[in-house]
Length: 272
Ligand code: ADP
Image 1 (cartoon, rainbow, N blue to C red):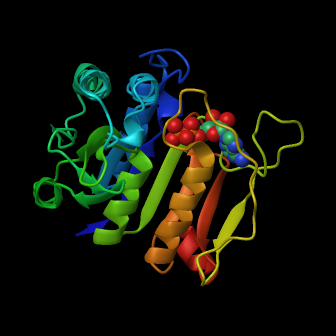
Image 2 (spheres, protein in one colour):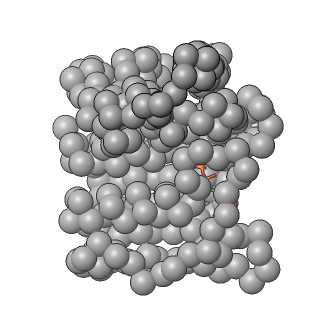
């Protein structure tokens, strides 16, 4: 299917990343406004949200992203399994308690419960048929970052950004919009003086970009922060040969944002 947009609602945008399981109170209604507007315009969309302080704290504490080492002892394995379970339960809390209550008719179904599977931390199994069926029935699939089983390492962390990369490589996605807590990708962490928002980032034929960004991440982030997001964005543009445009904007205000696109993108592509 053709997807007009995948909307990523970043963990930083909807949660206080450094405070355990804390939502930013005004953020979800804003996210739903964006989704509602997209739906009113008739667009086919998929929503992916990050886990933020739901999930990341447990994932970090129990080192879920490192998987299960072959030399792990019984006691440590028990702890690791508990950490995996706590991480998944924590992530589910954003889902069950907050999304349905908003009563957005288009959000009918969460398909993250159907487990994704990774191998060496790259997705190898995912609910393609279910997502296709939801889209066919005109529902909005809602997916989220999570802990999952990994074929080589036992456990893995699947970030919302990786989910988007997978969707873009299997569906005809026209736009990927990353809504986060800053106006876009800056040349250095935006908290630093003189940080400049990079307006357009062009991905060259060899999949590289000219801009080098300085980065830092929340102490509880286990998915790589802005640098990983930029890497994901450039891969999406490369693998779709520029057909999918990527935007990074603040959830609060989409007045300024980055656009990450292929060097061949025309003005018309960007305006559409
Ligand atoms: P999300 O959880 O919304 O997907 P991340 O937390 O992974 O987003 O990344 C956004 C954070 O990255 C921002 O809070 C910002 O402070 C930080 N950051 C670090 N370096 C940069 C940079 N060069 N440009 C933009 N943001 C940056």
